[in-house]
Image (cartoon, helix red, strand yellow):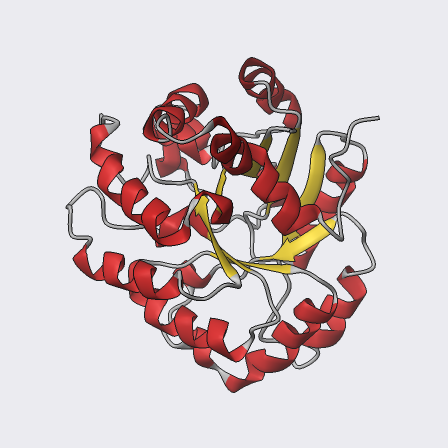
Length: 284
């Protein structure tokens, strides 16, 4: 089964649409391309990736699709469209013509209105996503989870991926409410959980044990067939780097069967993102 990194980025600072990416970000405030990622993929035995948006612009989505077109290892792209536009559904229809687009991700964590997900105007674009078998990547914070549950219930035909476990507050250990919401969200069959981004939510100099409660809980709720691993590279460079995070994830899942681990590290991403869109993962 092909190993897939289900969540990474690339960016070029000169494009100037990454509002969150400032000099204060230190080691990740520079250009990152697929050539920088290649050694990490090779060391990990990873053959395929899902390239995820990092800027809230349709221009970046086109930029990522152009990169993916010439990169065999990129199996699909999760992009962005302006969900607030009056013609958002038509924009999604147009982007859906690009075969490597496998999903869309509004940057909910950066939207000032905590109730943005509940806007009735989102119904049409979300229905358009479902028509085209596009996945909704949910970049949310713990306070958004109750709203996300409502959206999931409104759109049972749309596949949702919860990015970064919904960013639990690992650094403070305040995850009781998050655990309740994750348990509720996991009862919805059209949601899967992405094992990514936890290193940057933990305290500096985190240890594997600092992540275990959240991972064990999400695994118990979603099960190994509804969890997929992603590096969140190069953001993960702020919290130990690619190899350190991968080793931690492998350690946290070591007690699972080889079949379950293979699903999390590739099979589930292929099923969720690539079953009807993107590049196929079968070897010839």
